[in-house]
Image (tube, rainbow, N blue to C red):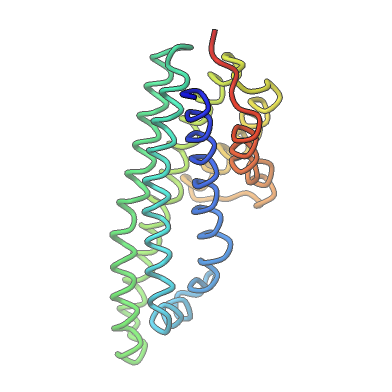
Length: 221
């Protein structure tokens, strides 16, 4: 009974993490953000502030979900190597904190968008919006993803060692994180790589969550 409950909690944690982040990035962000066009981005936010507020809410839920998932993974893997599991959990806490902290700039952008639409498109407000957006993305995307990649590599390594899930599934997580880590490092230093490098990891959290819910975990020996 306890093991089944543990399986359910971990599986749901993975799935919820996928749902909030995927929904925000794929469905919600295109409703308020125009790539490389802050003028139209501000107008879209001013016209539909509730959409932007939903974006903020989903990111905060994602941040909470990251920390919760990290806690469950730590509890499941601490018997394999407590030091690595604790370090990985700390990185997940850092990831969630950075993502949540970046939402401060989101509220700045929301306020700037209202003033921008009323002021006749002030260039000063456009400049401030650019600074706020770039700050939000650097903290809430680049830095938070770096913490995630390193922490996830540690957790998936422990999953591989523990064999509580099939080794091929752990390897999928580990190998698909490598291009994600490279892309994150590139963003930190001001460059980027094609989105296709990220594709192998995108379905992983949903798949592993469903796998754990349906197949369960093999107890650590």
